[in-house]
Length: 522
Image (cartoon, rainbow, N blue to C red; front, top):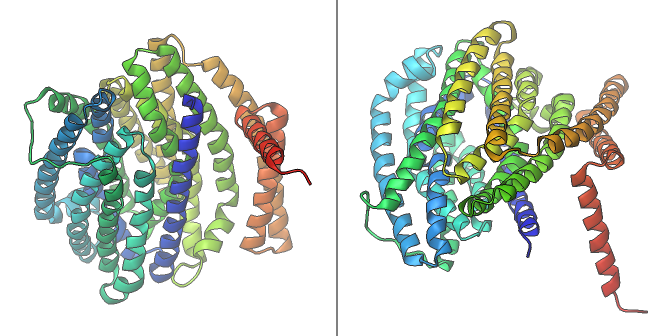
């Protein structure tokens, strides 16, 4: 099987699993919305995640994945399974010790962290509840840390199914908490549900680990060359992702000073944009990373250039029209999914502005998944760190400038602008390093995607105006708008020669032809 076909099939499989996780995430949000709406309870709940998420990122988030996988891949490529499992065991043991110690420290410091860092704008009662929730959620930090290592191990063996199914488990746990624990314990039931979901996130991968001969060893190996290389690669990436999450701490800090419900509105807008970003950007990034690492180990610059360029073309062709559709159909989408129970029309309007401004950064966030991994595949975590640090400073400055005139929406817009600038800078550095990244081809592709998206947007804007004038409800508006969007973008994209659409059409014709050829004669 060719690299291109292998990559495409794995992207489709991982994307499908992420779509399932996104669907369950939507169900989770619907259940939460009907019970809590947008207000103080959810502000407290989402604020309680800020420090645990930062700790997870520092200990075992994407930093560990991008540092651990290239080193592990060398053992696997050399058929040294014993060495691979020893390295995996050592990393797991170190992560459990570090995550456990930091979680205990964070639990002890929780009152100070919430009052002065995360949510200084909350009332004392809300701050106390945030502390209680944060201490519960910290348990999930340790579980997710171990789970992320096992994701990397299975991906190293070019196995993507079980790691892709893990995100499906997490919202199920929160749904359990919302339906059966929240009526008893209030918003604390949601926090316990998050811990249950993180445990399921870890457990789902056990069959895959057993299949590949998982062998845990009680070792740390902190003085070995492999562990040193993981640490050296991980250090800059920890700072990189830590900086990214610090901007979210700043966002929560500023939002806590705005109207009640602002923290929740930002979280819900972010969650909406994360659905397509995960299904497309993360799926492409996860599947392309082992291929990019292998190409980098062979010093195949041409292969790196073509793999990154083709992946970026596909990501842009998918995310740009989705971003436009989210901006234009945001109101009926929110109303259809969430406007019931405690989530009223005012809640819909509160979430709408952050949703639209975050949608402007969908293309940037999705492309960042690939652009950053191109550096990590070459075991270079320093360059993205410098760029991320500068971008974070730019983001904070933008937030301070925009929060006054635009409120919560300004915080979302600052994020979208900063991330888009970060991707451009990363690609410019790669262009210099690789003597090109297919920039002309990328601009040519954008010259086809942008007009196709513009045609779709004009048609969709007319549909929205018509639906408002005709008094259509959210569901008819979405059905009509969705059908028109897909049809216009597909037709315009095919006429303009968008490669992804043409390849999809050709594959569909080939599959149909093969199916007809296999049919027995009458």
